[in-house]
Image (tube, rainbow, N blue to C red):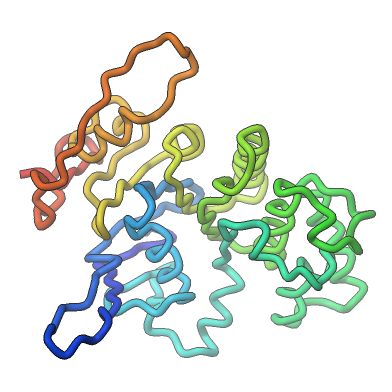
Length: 293
């Protein structure tokens, strides 16, 4: 049984009310389904506005979905009471996209990482401080800097603080929502490699939300491609990069930069008008499905 399974997830937003129009709600997430096996890193990719972050936040009920199911170890997160959801969140955490706005600027770094332990009443005060120092070392930070404010850290260090906070409760499932998009290219590889190392050390299951396909190719074992709120293709990473079937996936892959500045790549022009948005996913290869006629 998968550790996490999303079934027909929908999130709609009402349009502004106008007396002369009765527009249907906008579906930011429209019938999304996928499963994540225990111990794997699953990639969710697509351009900005495709519904990736909304899907991730709905999975943790940071945004309440319109309908669907999110199963964690077989239990429907969306049907949980507030008390049970609080208990489940010890096992399901998130690393947010922006390392600047996701940390309270008035809290010390140690207090930020300790906060989940206080909320869930884990350990004594001395025990929590020891745990925070251990987490700092785990993510490559110096425990001597526990009393610094977020502004005293670099962007990459702030993201490490966010990662330490997410790991504080020893979760089994972590969502990394565009964890490096706000960082310099020189720092991005460090953070992604750290995530991969921690996954191996701690046995984490990870959902990596990204628009940078190079990171996904490096970090993920399977990938789902989102376009306008729907999953249009899903496959093992190697198969997706070698044999993309959906025209949107082909266009995305053709836009990935190559290291050689003299190399010529044929860009694939994407014709949105030619895509059938209602086409269901069908199998096109081993564990490979695409929404094509």
